[in-house]
Length: 122
Image 1 (tube, rainbow, N blue to C red):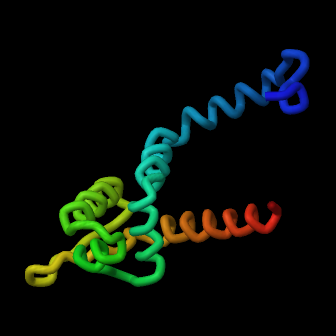
Image 2 (image 1 turned 45 degrees about the vertical axis):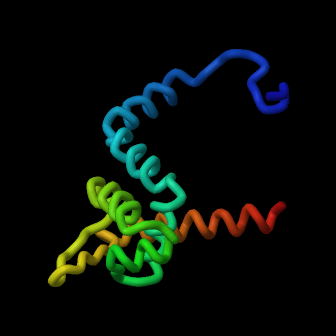
């Protein structure tokens, strides 16, 4: 870090800090952090993005999209399902997954848009 991006003296707005700390305590930051950590894995982000493109995919579709085994795809899908990012349904011997709701789709698409803006400014 250079001196340009740090404070040169130590002082803070106690009222502001207390207000923000109270809001952080009220929010479920731990669970939000878990969601970002789970979709922070590149393969799981690919799955979420693929499910932004298609309403649902079976485990075999996901394995082929990722270029992995069905077991690896299943592991990633279960991880996403445990945090209610995905939902699944069985149809005979096939298991289909889809996004649990539109919020993850919005996060993925916003992140892609942000990434495109960053690239445009470089």
